[in-house]
Image (cartoon, rainbow, N blue to C red):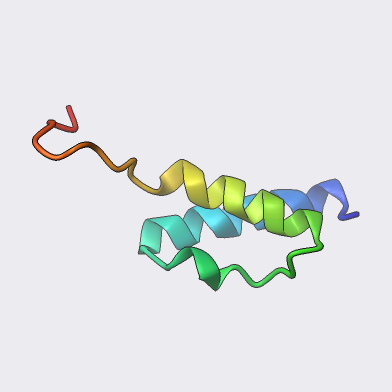
Length: 58
């Protein structure tokens, strides 16, 4: 399990990847790592939510 500092870094890195528009498979952590979950959580915070066709995002 990662330390709190490592988890915060992973969340931050995921947010930055989401801001850059990187694909979700750009995560540098293996699937068995809790840091992967933290990275994906940060990534998901920054990616836009898909809307149904014809709906406004506002």
